[in-house]
Length: 116
Length: 115
Image (cartoon, rainbow over all chains, first blue to last red):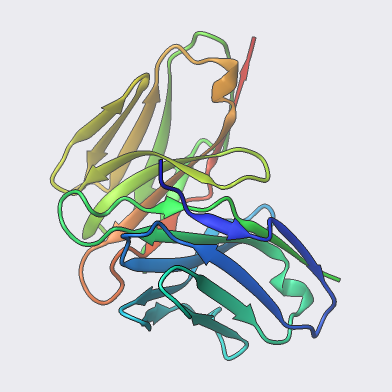
């Protein structure tokens, strides 16, 4: 069964360093998302991406964050200068497209980012 | 702004019980509602998706209902098993606009089924 794949599963980084979280969405999906979950809190939306551009971003997604789909398969989230409060589980998700059967969201297993 | 609330926050039941998890949302203009399962430290596994035009969906021992007008959904788990122990998350996808597929999550119900 097709699945969303995220790497790495766990990343430890020093405050101020840049990190790139990688995702391979399901191949025929059109809409891509990043969410994050701080320990003990709700899963919260960061950004949505469609047709090679951001379609919506949350207040959390400030200038330190960027997303890219550099080729036909990868979808990346970059944090330029990490802060302690960026420590969280980051989830990538994808959706096939609009339509009656095309709205189920598929999530990856997450990348646990620890900023020290 | 859409708010999603899940009750109870935690539930502990003996094996074999039937149980109900509740989800409420403040804005009834949704495209669909999805229930997920999350094991500790793991990702989100989709359990059921209910389109806004549907009233319920079933998968095995799971049944989810949706009352869009009152802003409520329930997840019914029949004959619970220890392997059902996990956090159950409800998420709504609001309708229209550029934010297609953007999910708003509840805080989850932590379910423990003991033998």
